[in-house]
Image (cartoon, rainbow, N blue to C red; front, side):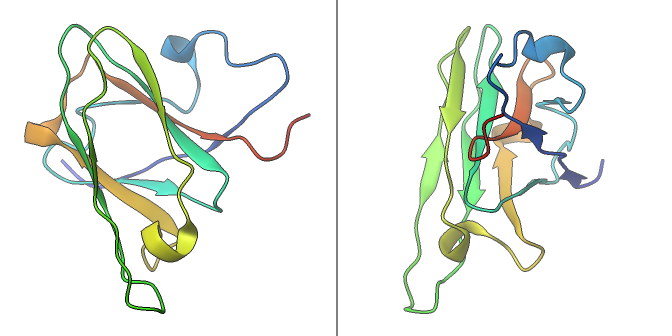
Length: 122
């Protein structure tokens, strides 16, 4: 497969009622063994809706201007929803302005990922 660049969904007062039918959702196996890229302005979080089993998600950090780097590997709980983030751009954004992440072993088609911007409520 190929890298997937996600489209960010703006958070709204009414909320996101059904992630399964959200326009900008991606399935957990959509990138195969490649990576997901989530545009990030520091106000974006990753919403994960996980099926009956779960896969660890590894986020790729960058070294900031002070030489600091982070490590983040999360395993969302099976049959639950999780929000991960927000991500400090100086530590997480790749050169393309996106957070890079990859689920273990190519991900699962029962997992749904949605990038949600939470900083501009309307």
